[in-house]
Length: 456
Image (cartoon, rainbow, N blue to C red):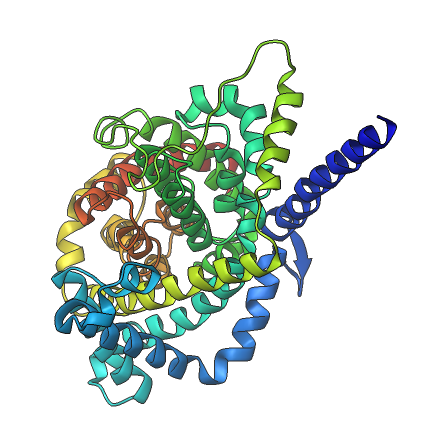
């Protein structure tokens, strides 16, 4: 009997540490702000930046390889359909696409080759269009390479189950979200927004979020990382107000999420259905006779016991990375570049922005005609509002546009493309509606808090 009790105790300790150690490492990597080179970052960001510097000399050619493989194998799997492509599995799921996405992958490949080789027309190679997007994709590959192998530390070893049980009674009434979303919300907000969206979509595809929950988190809680906030602030020359800026950004982000979780389409269009191929994989009922903390710990340890070993962790990370580069890169190169071309060479965004000019005037902003396009071009990319509004003379107007561009975060060059390319039941029209709603809600809040907290 004594031997059995000792073995059980050892087993309990082993399971506890299998939960504790990976979870602490994951929280440190994704959530812990650190100072490096005079800027605040997270450890994942430092790792990603190191990878980005390493691959920078040949990143364009990596992109060409990835998009070419994506296009060629998509054509083979989707159109030629030889016998060896008919077997269901990872590669079949990766390369069998709709005619629309096949066309996007082919166009994305052509654009990537033209930009990487410098053989395309000037309007395509410009630093405001294809040149900007291909440089951005080189950085994103580094982020996704690091995150793909590290995300399971947050998702597969119990920390989301632990925090979910503890915080269920807070997140549910505030945002209509399950408690397990707490770590996801923090990772999406503090870390890179693209990594946060990938984390959310993978949790949906694994059966831990409903469609509504995943879409709400991805569209309302993804913010750009602290270093990028600093970059945008510097471009807009309002970095001397960074502390006030980030405070207002956080307040507006939370308040707008509370509002948007209660209005259509985030409330009403999707009906809390789990991803059909896997079904619901989470059960949050709290049994009687046990404290919430004890139940949270039991849930976490139970999850950690099923967590992958090192080899499975590597295979899972590799599959996630390949999924991202073969699906996201060509889509982003296509949609992102064409959207930037529309922004740079057509007046379409100026026309769309006219109502926002009147909206800004209603709240007393200056230089509204110049600022208004900055309210809509953020749908294309978060850098474009900063680039087109940096010359505005009014510091207050630049400050407002700076925060707005960081709150919107559904831009098609990255976040939007990831969501459309995921299994989430969301369309481009849905993203446009959510973007416009968030913008309309955020503008008066930003101006209100700016008037309260900032003296120019």
